[in-house]
Structure formats: structure tokens, C-alpha cells
Amino acid sequence: MDAPLLEVSNLSIAFGTHPAVQGISFHIAPGETLGLVGESGSGKSATSLALLRLLPSIAHVTGSIQFAGEELLALPEETMRRHRGRSLAMIFQEPMTALNPVMPIGRQIAEAIEAHHPELPRKAVKDRVIAAMHEVALPDPALRLNDYPHQFSGGQRQRILIAQALVNRPRLLIADEPTTALDVTVQAQILRLLNDLRRTHNLSMLFISHDLAVVAQVADRVAVMHHGQIVEQAPTLQLFRNPQHPYTRRLLASAPTMQTDRTQPLATLK
Image (spheres, rainbow, N blue to C red):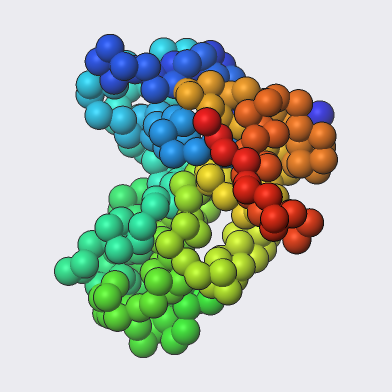
């Protein structure tokens, strides 16, 4: 078995006196996707931001985050900045807030390249931007470099964020609820795109969602978070067929399927 690309051990996060994450541990192998699921407020997004050390200064983070054998929590900020967007990248929630509304999308993708490859001439940067836009199936990329986020649909804006995250060929992609605001058809397109890019580039991925049906389509393994703790981890099929923890069983029972008895109320998470 390959050594993990990412290994998180006993990670805890507190905001002042309020614990958000309590002693969680998980790993992601090269080319593997781990689904991190749980209801809102369970600590999923705080965990993802901790991996990139993007939490506010009020946050107190302890434990270990090892990436390719390097302890991220011990790195100087300048060294960590070189990792962000290059070795590790993130697709944030809500593309309309993650994208700058007054900057052309070509310039926004170019900034991600220039931050890590300042030596590249302008023509090479432009070529990389167009190639990244083409890879995520944005139509007419060379003609739309100077368009603004509001001129694209919701699904296209999500593709722009994916292009921005992957343009420097990171080894680990953190996808935080990347399909939440999309309709079902566009959601399926984005999931297919992520799966294709993962296979093409041997990409490892932490896929964060509250939607179990979405996670089932992309994850090799699933970790279930509840009140800041990981209560269960298992291969995806095993977890869906034979959940062990009571919370996991309630989480699965709260989502309707084709076999759900419509005469009975869905299970609640309380």
C-alpha cells in the first residue's frame, strides 16, 4: 500500500473557548478521494480550512497535518503560501462570492499561475489559462477571457473555480460543497468533470458535502463527522450497505431513496 499523501492525526480546532473539531484523524492516499460528510456545523469546513492554514487568527489548531511527509502546521507562513494553490488547492463554496465580480475571469485564473510561476512570459500564462478553461469544458475560452463572472451561468462559474484550482496541477484538491447551489443536471456534469480530472491527473481529493448521494458518486471512502468528531470511516459501498454508528444510520435514513416508504416520515438527525 502506498504511503498516504495526506495524513491528519488528532486534529483539534477551537475558536476561543468553543471547540469546533475534536481530535479527528484520517488519511488520503495518492489518487484517492475521501468523502467527508455531516450536517451543517459538524466541523467539515473548519477542517478543510485548517489543512490550508486559512483559519482566522482566533482559531487554535493542534495535532498534526502531514502532506507528503511534511508537517504543514510547523511550516513558516511563506513556505505554506508556496504550497497553497500549487501542491494543495481548494474549490470554495458559492462561486459568486469566491470569484471577484469586477475582474475578468481570465485574469483571475492567470493570477493563480503568476503567483507560483512569476518567470513565465505573458503569452505562456495566457496559453495556460486557455488550456485550463478548455479542460473544464468552458465554451470558446479564447473569446471569453475578458468576460466577468456575472456573464456565466452557475455551472460555468463552478467550472471557472475548478480551472483556477487545477491550473497549477496540485496533488491534492479540497472540494468544499462544490455542487450545493447547482441544479441536478449541472451537478451531474460537475461530478463527471471532477472524476475525469481525477483520473487524468492522478489527483487526490477531499470531497466535502452534506449530500450522501453526491458523495456516493465520487468517494472511494467516506468519513462521517458529527459534533466535531469523526464517528465512522469506511469504504463507500461498505458504509452505505452496513453503517455501524447510530448517527451514520440516521444520516442515511434521513435521505429519501426509491425504496423509501412514502407513507412514513423520514428519520431525523436529532
